Image 1 (cartoon, rainbow, N blue to C red):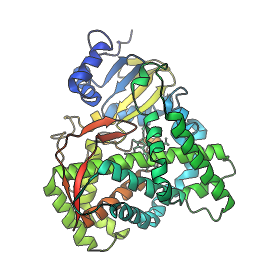
Image 2 (cartoon, rainbow, N blue to C red):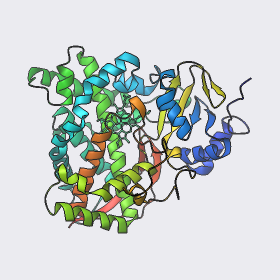
Image 3 (cartoon, rainbow, N blue to C red):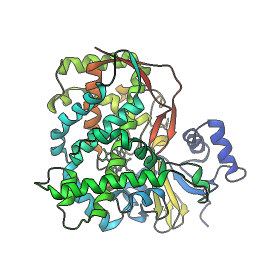
Image 4 (spheres, rainbow, N blue to C red):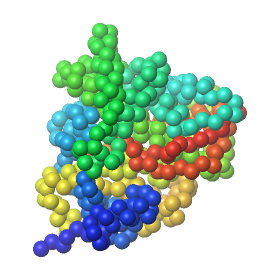
Length: 431
Ligand code: HEM
């Protein structure tokens, strides 16, 4: 008989809830369970049951060696209900075809053509900040990320629609965030239908407009429309997938990074010196971005401490063996990026912000211990885009503004991504 997968002791579910309450966070509780139970444990709460995997061996298993034994699609899951046949929730050939169709727009060669749109979007948002006023960077970075994503990948100016659709975007994100509705399908979720309808109207109209003015496809929307295998519904699914996966993650990365810099003004000052030495007063160019090593390290370290996607979720397609434990077919399996990236076995002072651990001459992280973009063939399709985008936006902000963090409490909130809630308040003034 294979051993039973460990669960938090005592009454199943109740102990888990107590631990989460004591730790005041699910992430803290997962860290404790990992310490107490090891790299595989089962978490059962009312309405939720999953096998949790932690550490490099587990990551290699889920992402590479055992990847064909998992499915991504969960029919009754809100992510699937929202994205329908988006690349993120498809399996097998259908997934591979969608990914191939979208790859060219996110390919490294395309990225340099996006640099100008990225700093222009940043400037547009910064122009709303008056001298010495306080802004919530969680909100401001969402504005930048939305403008930039739609401009670069869909060639659409989102500014006239931003305020009108703001609540619809937040409702859509809420729809796929963990919440009390998980405990029972009978808990009503008011207000979502309207938000989703507005997003759909916007996207279908965007598709119609482009169909009527289709030139040479130079962006993601153009690529999808000129693909003979795609109808409007399938295109809508990919647009919404990219809009959600592509902007909410960047929002989290940027706002966490500004928070960490605000907490460490000495490192912010060094980054500002680096940026000004390379860019002077000019907007960044693609070639200059390679000359900002400290900014790279800051972004890498921010992604380690607060990975926007902190969990990967799958379903076991058949009975699986992990380290002698049997995971039965149909079980939800999650691998924790957050806990893995803070394991003291692999990281010195894991909870400290130390960008220099990613310096070129520092030892490389052990394999599969650093996974902010996942790994294997289903790693993040937007990884290179996201890194370039973050670098341009942060360089531009650091070049133009002096920032001071207000001393307000920030929690790592598990929404659609891991977000600094209730926000990151900073006073800003022009340099
Ligand atoms: C800081 C920014 C980002 C982070 C941290 C991030 C993280 C991730 C991670 C960890 C995965 C794999 C999840 C798993 O193994 O379960 C993933 C997949 C994905 N990401 Fe990202 N992402 C970011 C930005 C983006 C952007 C900008 C886009 C699109 C423009 C994007 C689109 C996707 C898509 C479509 C997938 C699914 C790929 C597939 O299944 O083949 N992401 N991302």
